[in-house]
View 1 (tube, each protein chain N blue to C red):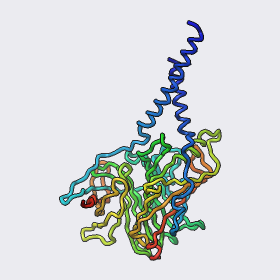
View 2 (cartoon, one colour; view 1 turned 180 degrees about the vertical axis):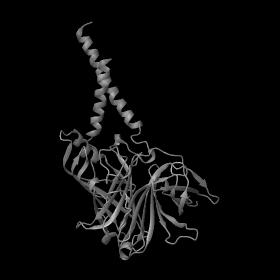
View 3 (cartoon, chains in turn purple, blue; view 1 turned 60 degrees about the vertical axis):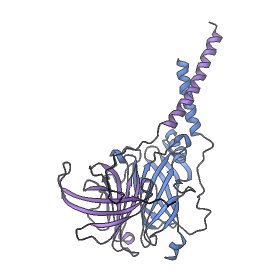
View 4 (cartoon, rainbow over the protein chains, first blue to last red; view 1 turned 90 degrees about the vertical axis):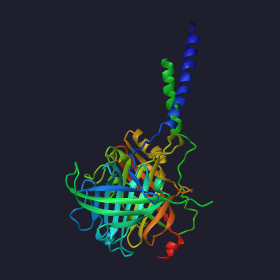
Length: 200
Length: 227
């Protein structure tokens, strides 16, 4: 076989390879997701009047990420340099991992509370569920006789964007858990419902 | 067969180079809020994890968490999430508030379209003013292309230069973030915001070295009247 013919065939194969590589890389980049978030099955209860209810749990102390409060010996994590009281006063900032009803971590949350804020005392939660969205909750200051505190959803993003509803926060002591023999738990129970569409 | 394989590798490399050097993608450096004549609130924060109050991620990135003993976000559902707690400062450099930023890599990321998207939410407290939530989609492609990749290619494992970019890409129609007021003078407020990033130095080993972010939040008239 003449050498010119062999080189020419090699060159053609090489060019075909380049085209295949270009197309293959394009198809791969287009079709394979660069980010594939892990999802846990949603554990919701359908409400009789529509909407659904979901329980979010925080086991203490294992789910604590941050405790920021002026003048406390229990700041978390160790080595945290919390800003002085001249700026934040009695602000209590906490961050947690949040779990579903099966005790599987499904997101993170922040809780800000300040009883002496000059524009008015407040307690707020932001729940960030990576695969679903973020929920912004505002709690009533006064707790009920049973020790619960109720509140409402102010805003939501992505999956929660069109929902409205209420939330109940309760603090449970002396829980029993296989991995977590004794401790405390915060439960947030949301009841969310989609807005009705415009009537035609 | 060998020439076909080499050709395919060259083709894939050409595709990657085309994607990286794509001349049709730039990065926004003019805020979509610049054309508005409304009063706005500007705050800045450090984007250097070691200078924050707290920074944590899955513990496997090049960026060190801070403080050292903060828990890692290693569980599968939050492994792509980062949290930063920062002091928010005004233009004079005085601390004016606290910001908690949750960021998660977005499934809408499409590298072929030069989009490395991140869903992020800010929980903000400004003493004497109130609280609010800022929800946004950010595009980190310009940051990766102009800072992170050059730093990795550099023999010194670092990047020095001048970078300014508008990170916010949505969810607002004009590429703005959505703001929901919580308490104080922000109660009931619905507004828009834009976040930008200014960088001067980055290390491929330690992450950001000299970098700060800015948040510009539009204050509707009703909010200003309550001041």
